[in-house]
Image 1 (spheres, rainbow, N blue to C red):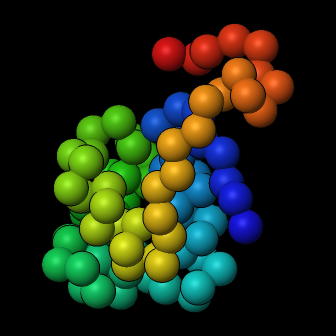
Image 2 (cartoon, one colour):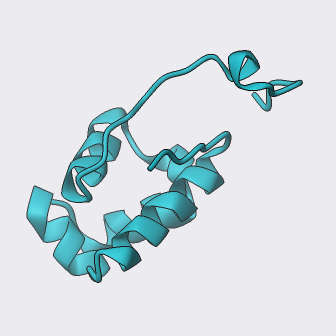
Length: 81
C-alpha cells in the first residue's frame, strides 16, 4: 500500500499507524534498528527533527521504503513546502 506524506507531521502519523498495525511498541520498533523509544516518539510527533539516517532506520524497522514522486503528476495543485 502507498502512503502519501506531504508534511513532517503526516509522515510521523503514517509511521505511527504502520507501527500500530504491526502491533509494535515504540520500544520494540526502536530495538529492531538500534533507536531509543524516545527517538521513535519524536519521529512520530515531529518528523522534521529526524535525520535522514534515523528516518531510514525507522522505515526499515517497519518494512517500509521511501518513494519519491512528483506531486504535480498525482493531481496535486500546489506544493506545501
